[in-house]
Structure formats: C-alpha cells, structure tokens
Length: 219
Image (cartoon, rainbow, N blue to C red; front, side, top):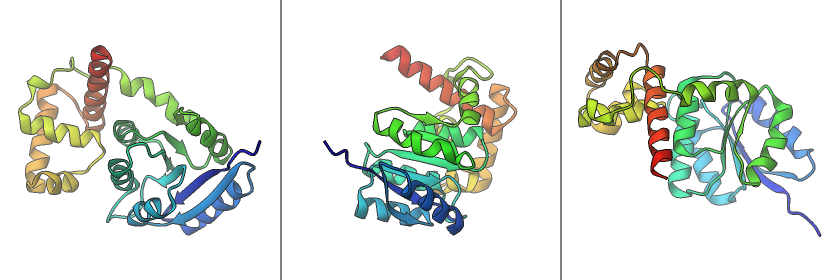
C-alpha cells in the first residue's frame, strides 16, 4: 500500500530560507513541497491553487501584511487548514495569536531537524511547538495578573483587548475598528491601568488564558 506524500507549501519573505527549507524537505521521504512564496498575499493565493496538506508560514513577512495576517485569512476561508508558523525568535504575543486563530503549530525555524517530524504529527491531528515555544505555553495559559472577568472592561475595551491578544499592533487595530491609532493607544493604556498589567504581552496572556479556561469550563 502506497502512502501519499505530505503536500507542503512554504512561504517566507527570505528567498534563501524558502529555498533552503524546500531543498531539505523536498529530500525528505514522504514529503512533497508543492509550492513556495514570499508574501502574505501569495500564501492565500497559493493555498487556493495548490490545496496543500500543511502550510509553513513565516510569522513576519514585511510591513504590508504578516504571516499572522495570512494565517487568519487562510483559516477564515478554510477552517480545517493546517497552518504551522515559523519564526526566528519566541514572542509571547505571537504564540498567543497563533493559538487563538487555531494554528497547528509554532516552530523556531533554526531547528530545521524538528520540521519534518512535525509535519507527520500535524497530519495525524496533533499540534507542534518547538522546545523553546513549548516552554512558554504554561506561562501563557496560566492566570496573568487579576482574575479573568471581561465585565471589568467596557465593550470597546474588551474588543481592543481581544485584538491585542491576536498580535495586532495599534495601527492594525485602528484600521479594524475604525478608530485613530492614538485612540487605540489610549484604550490599551487604560486597560493596562485598570487591570494592573504592565505590557501588551501581559494583557494578551491574561485574555488568552482567561478565554481558554472559560471554554474548558463550558465544554
């Protein structure tokens, strides 16, 4: 019985990284690299054309649109898509955003040896996180700061807090909710003060951990 290879799409704004990963994975038994790209818009277009089994997306791809933007767009259109993010460093807000949108993994791209085995895990229905990333999950999911209670926030504050937890910056949030960037900055500062938190990462952790525990309690 012949097993079909795992069809992989690779999108990274660095052509050298893209080609290197394509070469390494292309030489791996049971893996077929069906396409490569370098922008967030290309990721969505290639997904529609190629229908890959797994997409490896660089989490940072230029100022116009990031890998997070591409992941959100892909998962909005294809909710069962298997998206795995690649990064050069571990950032709590990015991890939180990846988890929140339903990504199947978050890997440090320098750990090349872990990528091919991760593909099999994802195809089997699992999620994959690099060792450095996995070490942050407990902290992200644990309570951060005050007890989780969204009714402590106004509707606008809760909306902006949710967008902060997705990894959006003030400009992106302003565009999403039709406010000025300055207004968004003021709302974020007000929420941090109200909750006694010091950073956007702490705010994202508070929101992500709280919503995850709420969902678990409701299930």
